[in-house]
Length: 365
Image 1 (cartoon, rainbow, N blue to C red):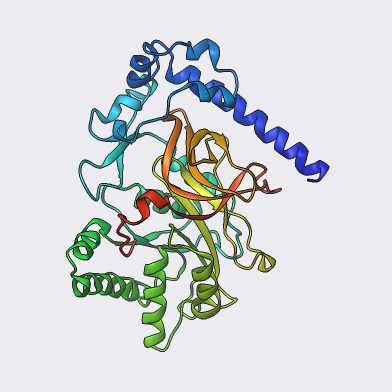
Image 2: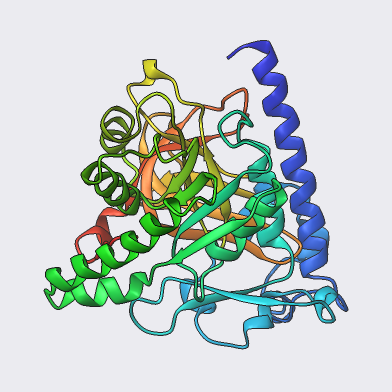
């Protein structure tokens, strides 16, 4: 690593340590803290207010349990500091059973304002209108993308998708029903894009973007010809193979696309700037210091794997609204070296964790 990158890494680590202490002090504050964590603290053999002095000290906490996010009260993880603020509730997952949920005040706005800083203005022109092609409903995505658009000076046109309905159709083998529903969503997107609204930017999932591009081709047009300059997309379907196909067959050189990886707990992890020399490899970097990820060993979640090695994704969320000291995501991938733009560990090859992959149904989302 260069001396400059080493300095950037050290500075980023210092900020992460400082953020860790600040967030733990809030969530465990006797009056302002989160009800859930104040109860949990009674079971620990350490004092979070005194014994957490850096990021590595988060290893003292037991792993965050997936089930804690299922069921109410939804405010249990939100510090009392926010009790008089306007609050939102967002869900993640929920294909089966009670969905996971979290209560939010400003995090969804902040996450996307930070993400906005990574978008090139020439491809996502300030003041441009956007198309949001994806799920709204209980997820935060619609509100967050709309805020991103407004933050950059535009108006957002939204087309809804209900991924839970698609999964139900696929699980019962109704592929024709799923195709019909996808076509219904694409019809709406096509109508908006051809209605003279001067839309230059969009969010879409990979499968919906592909379906929209193919529909435009059938109509003798294309994503570029319809006026789109910049796209951000996300999800485990965004593979290097699809990235190459998308750039070469669907978008061409005129349309910029940036991969993202994120969820309701983490926010948005950004992709490393596209480099043809990487052979379309996609490397994501968490939005430190508000969230951090580690790629850890399958048989020991307290140990990271070596660079280039495969492991499971371990998430830490460190905001004034949510504290997650080690959540085992349902994804795996390869640990990647820090980058000058993102001077901390990254992850490539994200895909469903192999122990879950066989039981996961992926729809159009």
